[in-house]
Length: 229
Image (tube, one colour):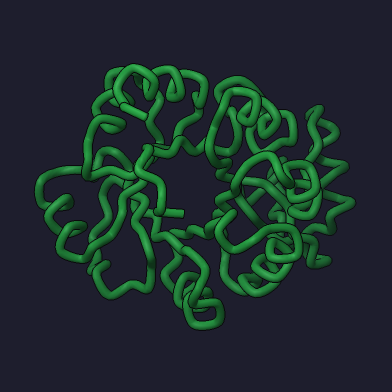
């Protein structure tokens, strides 16, 4: 994942500035726009179906208490389809690399085994805010790339967290953070960057490996302006 010198552009939940997030259409648009990778959220239903959905609830009901059929029925009332992880893998296979964000603990192995059925290890990464999930992944699957997501106001020791790279919110970036990343030899992928000025700044910064954005079309355009291929 970190072999390229070029800055990578990761579509946040697909091309979510243009289509409903975490849907096949959002993923299709991201591919069309030239994103290098697609980030999406993974949750598990009560009947153990792995799905792509950001929020813990859908129409006020917790996804973890619903069957996949019930999730689909509620989503259909709002006019969209919640894809399963397997659907995403079938749909995107051979078209792009993937970054699956695990929203909860307990199904790390299921996600990895399913993704490995469709992809080489070099074609996907896993990320999470949850340190326990990352610990499980690196313990069971040490060859896989796993990243720790950090909010804008994180207040915890992160140098000992088992992660290959860090995914900070752009507001967390300051000299202290950059020094910490350098000291721990952690590549940085910054989220969520949608402003042209910030995209230009981060895509020009040698300390940053890539950006996560709702606007992969804009990011691709800015990268052409600032990055030498």
